[in-house]
Image (tube, rainbow, N blue to C red; front, side, top):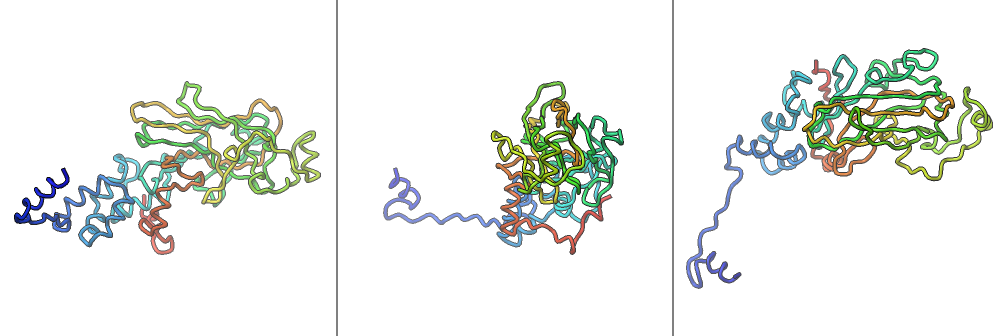
Length: 342
């Protein structure tokens, strides 16, 4: 079969060879190249822009980058930026506040999938309006106007909901509680697990146990805590290291984010894009009966989990592009697209 094919390609043994047919991609109209690139990904478009000046012009066009933006982006964020690529990069690097500042919206850099964070004010926090247990403060490191500081409770219950129609379809999402310890430090979370979950409203959903113990991550001894009772107080006063449950794994403890906060995974959800219901995330510790406090809650983040992305608020496809110098982050000192957003 191989020789027959060779004879056909060569015009037969001793026969004339047919001229080679080469397609010059640069001869294609730029609009045609842009139409093809719009079916790829942001990383692919950036890579292909290095092929030639024609490809670069097509890859920089609004037609290509508008295809990477969510179809409803105009309803979410009407923009006056000069180009769709500038808007895309701005939404990747600078989350914008929506719904009166109760949520933030951004895009995952490598795919253009939607990301949201529900602010503490957008969550349902039991006893959240009782000054004895919680207080609302403003801190510069938060993207929202207010965060919730847990003073002291024995009943911890936090819930958040988001309409599934707001999420990107056919996408695997994970939800995370975003928080940090107060200056005085958190207490009451070292030995007592917290139940977290993700699922459709009205269903059981996924449940798992995690630990909001911020000190374990740092590998320090515990500081003195002003509140608490019994053995818990004595171990803190004498600076003793509390024992860590031997059955707990690393993914049950908080991890550091690139923005300086901590996060703990609550669960995951695959959005098939065919249901119009609400997704509920929960954080519960209502059975231990002991007092706990010293946390600052910024919100709950829902973001895509692509290609086994890391847990530190940075997904693998984005890192590959960034490391290759293809889809570079804008220098905040040189350009700030967020200032152009309404």
